[in-house]
Image 1 (tube, rainbow, N blue to C red):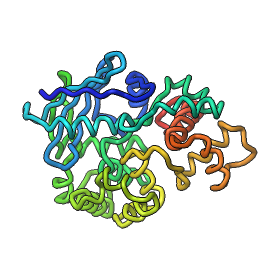
Image 2: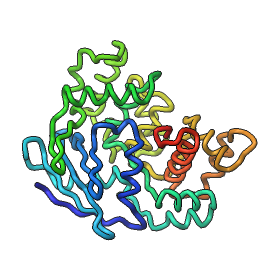
Image 3: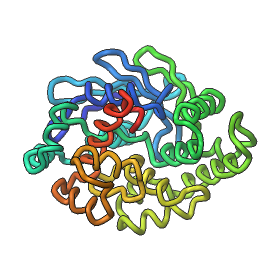
Image 4: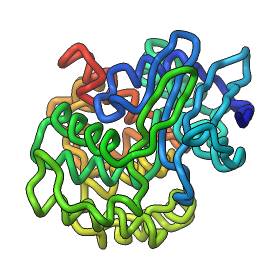
Length: 303
C-alpha cells in the first residue's frame, strides 16, 4: 500500500468534491463514496497499470493510499500527481476567493457549493473516451457503455475495501473489435483514442504546456474529436484552470440565467464576463454550469 499526502493551497473541501461526483454520471462505477472517504479506480498516467485509491481529508491535508491490481505496488509520485489533478489541487487556489469578491455571482456560488474546485476526469484519455462514446446518445447510456468496457477489459483493483474496475488501459482499447450499443464507427474512434494515448497526444502535462489553440488543434487530429470535444478533453481532462469554453452551448445558457442577460452571450460577451475570474476562468464556468444544472433539473448530471 502506497501512502501520499496533498496540501491544498487555498480553500478545499473533499466533501464538496464527493457531492459533485455523486451527480456526475460519466464517473459512475469508477468510484465509491464511503462517507468521509472516497475510493477510486483508474489507469495510471504512463499506462504501466491501474490503481485503486482511497482519499480522505485530515484538516487542511488530503491523505491517500493506493495499490495496484492484486495488491501490487504503484509509483507514489504518479498517483499523487494524478489525484491532485483530478481534484484541481495541482493549482494554487489562494486567489479563488478574490474572484468571488470581484464577482458577486461567483461569490454566491462559492458559498453555495463550498468553494468547489472542478473535479476532472482521471486523464485526458478518459475524457476523450467519454466524448466519443457520448456523441448523440444520453449521458446515462454512455456511462453504462463505459462501465461495461471497464468490467470487460479493465483491471480490477481494491480501494478502501471496495472492488472497482478501472477503465481499460489504452493498449487494450487499440485491439477493440466491438462494443455492445456502439456503432462500428465509434469503435474505430475508440481505437484511435487508444492509439493517441499511447502516442502521447493525450498526455496531460504535454497538453497543458502547449498554447491553448495549439493544444486544441492537436486534439482535433484524433478521429471523432471536434471543436466541443477538444475543449472538453483539454479543460476537464487535462485540468486547464484558466480558459473560456466557447464551443459549449450549455455554458452560454447557464451564463445567461446566472447573470440575468436578455439573450445568450456572444463570444465577446462571454469572454468579458469571465475576465473578472482570471486566473480561474474555467473554475467559474464549472460553478455556473453546476448551479444551472441543479436549477434546471435538480442534479449536477446536467453539467
